[in-house]
Amino acid sequence: MGRQRRKKQTERSLELGNTTRVQEFILLGLSTSPETREVLFVVFLTLYLLTLLENALIVFLVCSHSELHKPMYFFLGNLSCLEMCYVSVTMPSLLVGLWMGPYHVPFTACMTQLFFFIVLICTECTLLASMAYDRYVAICRPLHYPLLMRPQVCLGLAGTSWLGGLLVSVAKTTCIASLSYCGPNVLNQFFCDVSPLLNLSCTHVALTELVDFLSAIVIFCGTLLVALASYSVIGVTVFRMPSATARRKAFSTCASHLVVVGIFYSAALFIYCRPSHIRSMDLNKVLSVIYTVATPMCNPVIYCLRNKEVHAALLRTLRWT
Image (cartoon, rainbow, N blue to C red; front, side):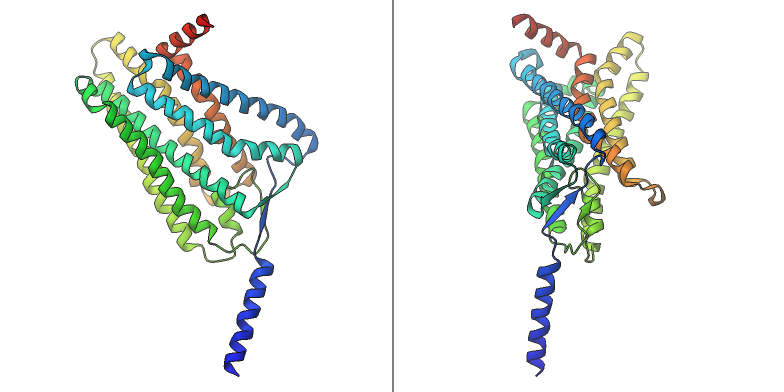
């Protein structure tokens, strides 16, 4: 009797799991108003194509001009490649939502998008820290720059950035995908993000939140500290320079990167670390647009406008054509 009762309970549990397990999610998208969606679709499609064009141009300039074969431009080329991938992970789902309104996303497709999103955002954090270290060596230890930033070191830093993002994403995505989602299945976001998915889980998420917290400490906070430490030392070194011209030149070499770091980390810090009493899903979506759409589009403009060598290479390319 006991064995039969346990068998029935197991069958009932399996049947319940099969009926309540979420097989797809509904993305509400950026806007629910049809009139607004039409305008936003045109705007964001233009921004998407412009972002791809800008970053592809940066990669082309870095690869085709020998004077840009330097560590700083090597990292800039990596960043542009990453931005093209990054915006291509989130922007298509944003555009589909603006075109169709709320739409269904299969569970597997949602987890796949989440995986690539985490890979790219973690890689960008580490790559920005590597670029900050490059500027630190260039300004604070110029005599050792050829040795400390030789090609093998640059390749190692870039490879570590991509590998670190991959490992973190495997751990986080595996934990999130293994959770049970019993409903509701509505994500008030334009792509599959970590926080909205955790809020929908009907199982205990303590382990997943721990993995998320530890990865944030290691990747996000760790790279932010590296960037802050690098620029703190750079600031002290620059202000100690006797010549105003030397100070201006040193500051101009890292100002563009400092702007990019400020925009990226400010948006990410506010969306993930602000107090719970001011949490708003609509505000989340606006902030997500900043670091998934605005930052990839603005980065090439910031670097091209403030960097004389990139600007000169672009002008030569335009003359050749």
